[in-house]
Amino acid sequence: MVPAAGQGERLGQGLPKALVEIGGEPLLCVTLARFESLGLLESAVIVIAPESRSVFRTVLDDAFPGRAFQLVDGGHERQQSVWNGLEALDSSTEVVVIHDAARPFVGHDSIRESIRGAEEVGAATVAIPCVDTILCSDDSGFLEPTPDRSKLWSCQTPQTFRVEVVRAAHRRAAEHNWTATDDATLVRASGGTVKLVEGSRENIKITTPGDLAYAAFLMEHDERFRLKPVSADRP
Image 1 (cartoon, one colour):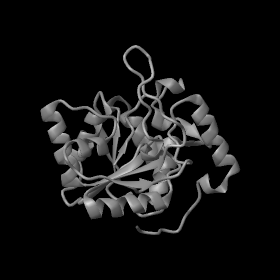
Image 2 (cartoon, rainbow, N blue to C red; image 1 turned 135 degrees about the horizontal axis):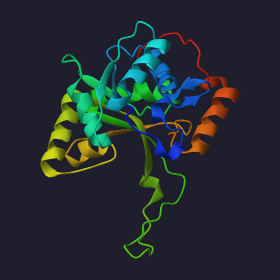
Image 3 (cartoon, rainbow, N blue to C red; image 1 turned 180 degrees about the vertical axis):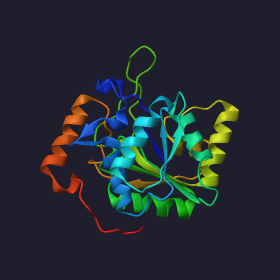
């Protein structure tokens, strides 16, 4: 599943973030290509802003002719969008990989390891160890005790789950009015176990114009990030 309903207002492009181009291709298509080479696009669910359905369909048909994506309407918040996507999964789906459309350079090893982690313990998230010291403030803007950096990770995606695990977490969150910016946090809050899978620093999230420029630079100057056919290598 790929949540792609964000409007990308900070990018200032006037169109959904997932359709902004890098290297001459829509961001969403660059991201999906990372999964196509692993054979993971069959029955893929893409969550979109409903008013942009026709343009998403056109872009996807052009980029992936013959590929049947299921487009699902997103909600006002990411959490609702993911729930809508979960409800739309094929009934035979046992493990769901949830990956941000705005992370076009996810590594194949990270995807594979997140799937293995979910199969083993029910849930896994890709993340990287923090290299910066993270400071916490009180309500008045003064420093609180600094957390131990050795235990801090920066969250990435994909986050991968057994379907029944992540659905149960979302149901419990709705019952208790919990909100979170990622699904692994909901699973942990509901008592589940989440395995951390180390990702890479290249697995950036496109949020600002600077991120977009950096992504375009990587695609132009580093062959690892160029769109090209890759032999299928199933996880």
